[in-house]
Structure formats: structure tokens, C-alpha cells
Image (cartoon, rainbow, N blue to C red; front, side, top):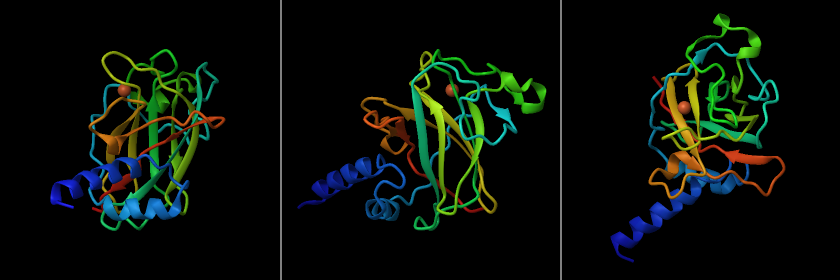
Length: 199
Ligand SMILES: [Fe+2]
């Protein structure tokens, strides 16, 4: 096998490894973690971040219509990718099934009525760095593919603001794209693992 073949194989491995849901294959997940030393890239905050959203088990707080979806993921230490980050605080925000944010602006939770805050919320990672929250499939809005925004904070780590893309075809960014698994009920979105940097 020449070096080009090895590079191709490694790329394929990373592509597949990035799409394995957290907790659905421990031994494979550990192998992926050993390879993925690069911290997760940041991405733009965008114009619709609301700070201090409540901790939720379901981002779809008021039952907006759409395709129900469970989001599962994991936060790991980029400096030691075998180590999860428990207690990390993830703020998520996304569109509803019509491509709108609630509210369609930025600000602070206290600036709004509680029922104006939807398809947003905060989740905390468990002892294994995992999170698991219900939501619905976000609709794309021109010119963006369907995506979910994240702001991740953990004590002793640099904050990370980023986004993940859902069901985007074909992607040159497999580390940040995943397909929703629709043969489960509810459908599962295996968010690519976040690697955050100490600092
Ligand atoms: Fe967005």
C-alpha cells in the first residue's frame, strides 16, 4: 500500500467514524477519538443567539409541528481525546419546521416572554460527556442547509461557538455533518463529537 492509498483509507475511516452516534459503538468510538486530535472548528454565531436559555429536555418547548428528532452527542477534551468533558454546558438553537427562529432576533432570555423562546435551550453533559435532547428536524433557510447552532462552555476550556449540518450531500466537511437516522423512532441525529480545547 502506498502513502496515497493510506491517506485515502484514513480519510474514509475518519468520514465513517465521524458519523457514528455517541454511545452506539464504544470500541469504534474510542478508535475514532484517538484519531481526531484536531479541535472542532468554530463557526459564525449568526444573528439569532439568545443568551441564558433554560435547561431543557426538549428544545421544542411548545410542541411546534415538524419531524420529531432526538439529538445525541458528546463533548471531549481535544488535548486528550480519550477524556470526556462532563458538566459542559451546551446552548443550542435552530429553526422550526418552517425555517424560522423563535424569536427571529438576538438578545437575552429575560428580554422575552417565556413562550417566545422556542427551538432553543441549554443542556448539560453527563459523566461521559454525553448529551441527549429532543427536538425536531430544522428546515433549511436560503442559502443555508439545515443546521443546528451550538455555544459550548466548560470550566477550564475555551468557549466554542459552532454549527452542525444535517443531511447535507455530499459534504467536504464530514467532521461536522451527519445524517439523521430515520429507521429509529424517534429519528436520531448523531451530532459529530465536539473536541474542545483547554484554556
Ligand atoms: Fe442559523
